[in-house]
Image 1 (cartoon, one colour):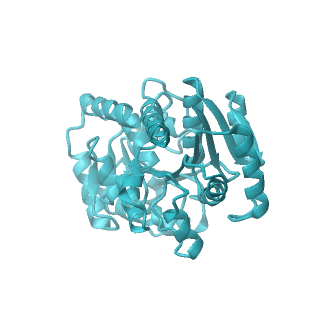
Image 2 (spheres, rainbow, N blue to C red):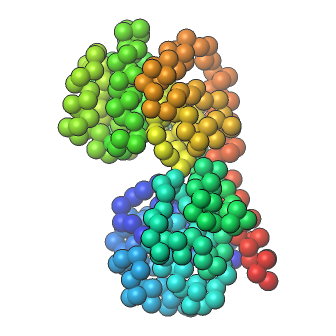
Image 3 (cartoon, one colour):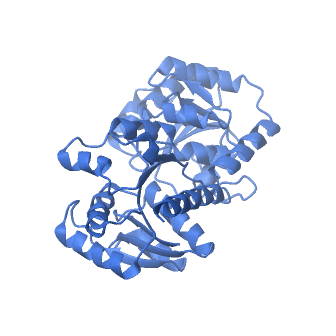
Length: 363
């Protein structure tokens, strides 16, 4: 098949990583792949180094006529069987191209749970016949699309992937910087870009509640903007705050996970957590909020849940975990489940099968 993957955005993101997994995997299986990504973005350089054909595109604004005209030229030159877009502006612009060319192979991947805008353009985007189908990364995202007016028959759930070779306890990476405490002490790990939705404040409060029960236990927080003054102020009001360590953005997450005792996800809303998939791939036990996407992940691997937004429930879940018999076989089962369900190979194969189904139905 001739396949275009396309998305806007210059900075690296989870969506860009997933698009790269798909483009790389499909190219390696012999398909002709073109990646249309944002001019000057990180994704273009990484993809070219992988031997993927790339066109850098200036998306300008969501409905830019100039951008749409240029995409139309790319479309008519490459003549794809499938165009899979992975972000909102690419969705809008490729929809216009599809309508211009009466193209029946536009597929939109929706990765976030946030409710789409309700302006007229957004309503058209999600209900237009110019989009052949939607790939949702979880049942929770699928339900959100249905609420936006997308027909259930146009939605396919395919989970995003984790690099289970990199996130593998047998392939240990080294820490880029040493931990700010004795490496032999147990610690809870929480990774997430700082925002209220991720629940950093809740994790700090819950740790403050349980820290007196576990004398040597530490809390490690990493992610973009976690070194902000706002989070520092929250932590300063916590008891035993000398055992809460904020690392900022780190690229050595597998190494951090390999040494942790427990991983926490405290999101209030999420499409499908990449860090939960990564922790499970490392065989690292997880305590997670009981939002729909996390409960969905729990259908495939054992996760300890707490009531979303409830500090006491999170404290209780942490205490329950450290009182449980977590042995090597439990961790190995987490790893096996993640590799089977969330591996790159599985995502690429499921996506290609869905593409082929769409192409066959167009014949």
